[in-house]
Image (cartoon, rainbow, N blue to C red; front, side, top):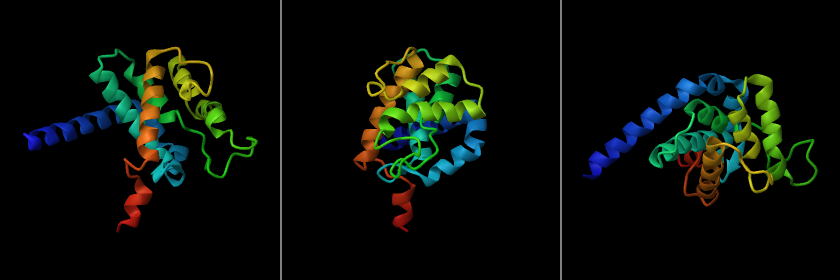
Length: 172
């Protein structure tokens, strides 16, 4: 029984990954996205890993809860929700003090708009994923899913319930 469930879990992960590639291959291949693996997000998890976790989990949760979403918008918005392109532990030159949590959605949106054609739903996902810090709530279902999943993934990563690349490299 456990083997059967494990096999089903990994098969589902492969299917989710195929959907991510189908809708977001250009993002996955973008230089800035690839380089985001150098910056840590939470704990030992890189920004790139975090974005992938949030994307995969958002697809999974929407499906499990039977929330009818535009998968393309969900994937693209989730991949780009933290497209801020700096090490937030050091800070961003345009940010005074420690305002990263409040300001990075607008920085991510500006960066994403420079490289990709975004829909309104994708903009909504990126710009409102930090609600309630950003004060204005998401407008579409896709943005609500990513917002909630982002909080969940961040919690797991911060408390080291998910191991990132940095942690895995040190074990070797």
